[in-house]
Length: 200
Image (tube, rainbow, N blue to C red):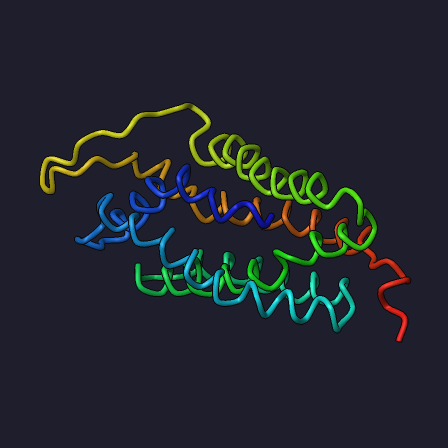
């Protein structure tokens, strides 16, 4: 779930098409450029907070809170009627949750595999990226199962997916949220800190 901040590269054009058919005259590919930089900036602000909390509080609780923020933010973004509200929830709130939980599995792994910290970190961060890779296929299969191409709108001159494809965007995110919730529950069930590091 954490790595799905990168999913935007796959779904951005679908979201822009969605807002185009909702009547937003500004909806074009130039809007998609702002999402990743804003997301990274917000996540960067909350990464140290998540690392601080992880060393002082229960790792399961941190995953639950941060993951809950992620899923709720994406769900609320699907209810947005304007691009600004979508951007607020998707690029502003979603990365808060990611920042809070980013370091939790890494620091827990360091505690259990102190002699293999580099390997543990690489596997976890690689897993983050692999999540976006897998959900790229999942999201496309949901929103564009027939592999339609974009066509040029004669009025604006911008390229959009069809209205039928664009209207599947909320469903795409809702299904992904369900999958992420299952992964989050699994992560909460399996994660634990090394008791040697929690002794007072």
